[in-house]
Image 1 (spheres, rainbow, N blue to C red):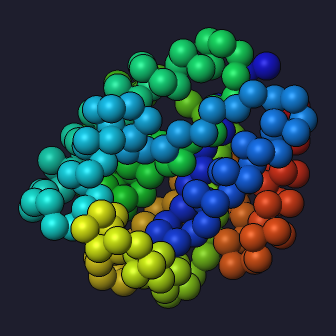
Image 2 (spheres, rainbow, N blue to C red):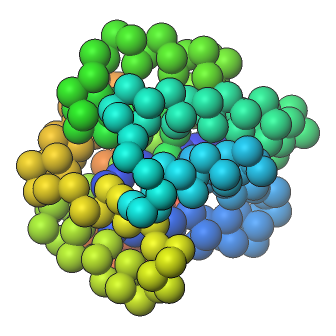
Length: 211
């Protein structure tokens, strides 16, 4: 029983923690699940991730940023996600095509129609069975993200998006909620301000719908 579930949300929303807990919970229920992330999931994707997320790497224009994210996705889907689904496994992915619309579309202001075309090409038309959106106020989101970055080694800090201004992140949040309103049958909005245990319980309840 293959399932493709994406975890979406702004910086510091807690989705990375929840994806790990969800994989463990599925394993307890006898379900083999692959946890992966974008950009990443392949050797090429990890190299692109380093360029995209590390603030000190180099300047990146909005269009180049979009193309790098979709290039990483094309390799990710072909090399990692589709093979796992073909094996009958569940795939839990930390961000996917919705993130591109939220960040590069709503956040950067790039044309949504063009992004959708690139998303379809880079994802090989793959769409999630369910998308969990972890929503919380921007101020809370950024405070959590800054704390995470401060606690890690400076030279490997993935902090480029964290240093964007408040309005940029407000547009991203609005974008995610807009996408959820457009596809309510796919999205499940989860209160990201709750404690880890309560959020995990809600994630499990949502995933159980796919059993």
